[in-house]
Amino acid sequence: MAEAATLDPPLPGENVKPFTPEKAKEIVMSLQQPAMFCNMVFDWPALHWNAKYLSEVLDGKKIQFRMGMKKTDTAPQFETKCSYVEATLEEFLAWTCGQPTCVSRPFSCYDFSKYWTYADYKYIAMIFEDKTEIFKDIMWSDFGFPGRNGKESTLWIGSAGANTPCHLDSYGCNLVLQIQGRKRWHLFPPGNTTFLYPTRIPYEESSIFSKVNVVNPDLKHYPQFRKAQAHVVTLNPGQVLFVPRHWWHYVESIDPITVSINSWIELDADHKARVEEAVTRTLVCAIKSAENPSRVDAWLNPTEVEATSHEINLQYLNGAMSAYLEYQKVTVSKDRDPSTHDTEKEASSYKRRKIEVNTKPEDYKSWTHEAGFTVVQAKKLEKIPFGVHLIPVLPQSQEGSSVGAGAVESDSRDLLSENEEGHFGKLRCSGKQSVMINDCETLADQTDADSNANSSQMAISTNDLLDCLVNPQVINLVTGLLLERERV
Image (cartoon, rainbow, N blue to C red; front, side, top):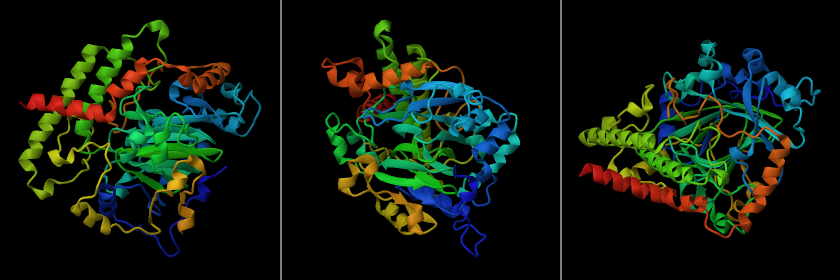
């Protein structure tokens, strides 16, 4: 078990951080590639948040765990194919240590050698709602975001093999702190979107999934994935990974127990992204809801409470468009003032209501194309001090990138929507999950069937149609046309 004691200490003789908050923020807002910050959090109390400590703090409180299978399959294990259990962290720790089933009861029908489990995406503000003093253990102010702490962060606790399917986040950029154990990140730039075969089924607001199992790809069905350029890195305790906007990522725990914390940093470009997400939701819900109920697959991700009605979706779409157009008015009136050009939002608890004054119309290029650096960006990047304190996550060799996990990876050790509580990030429901599989046998059977079903279907399905209609490039075009209509 990798404990907090393995955290990276500051270098000998150093008791100050390598970057000031202002410099760290400049790096985050300028950098267009993933990178790891080292020696920036050695004084954070959150570094002691290993699973044993958290189990004591939660004191028997049950949280939801997602169960998946440890198997080499070419089909991604989407959340709709997983089972779920409610358990305490004590029971989780007992299961990972192989203790008797009477101690790890909720996990009793899951063989630890065949299954992994993941308490993923737990809002710290919710699971520690009666222990708010713990929020200050997380100090994102060190990265130039004053006031941001555990209240705007999420917690991830998993066993070896626990993973998040390859996807991109529609909103913001991401800072991820590793606390216990190691995680391996497979990242792909926005320009690789076509090669990753994007899909919105299962549907979840702000997440675009890939049909490809990037660590064991089916190159017969997804041949374009050969062209994808993977950036792979192992994140160790005490390190903070920066994930730029719209970078695809697949994340897997590689130690028996892993604990990490992240926070999404909202960006000006999120204004238009919310319109794109509203268009997508309206189309997906309208078409999937029209299917024969007896033949409908699990298309709604368990993180979504329910399929919203067409009327509600149109209200959301109109609201998002109005907010974006209002934001553009402010932008046009101030875009000649250099002092207003800051892509990060200052502290505010109402993401959807905020109007910022940075993004110009020409900045809204399709994010499905490879982002090129402007002269200004290039000058900024020249000033970014890569080294032992800031390690770039470099692309793999071309021949290695198409074979997934077997390729060479970067390792730092070798180189030395807001919710009601004002949380920034994806909108995740906290209530009952809409799709849940609770039987171990059912989970295994479904996973096996899924790997063979796609190849035998010859007719165009509803999901095939949706993959075209809500393709990111199409949604970007539709959003542009809708906004032009409103401007007239």
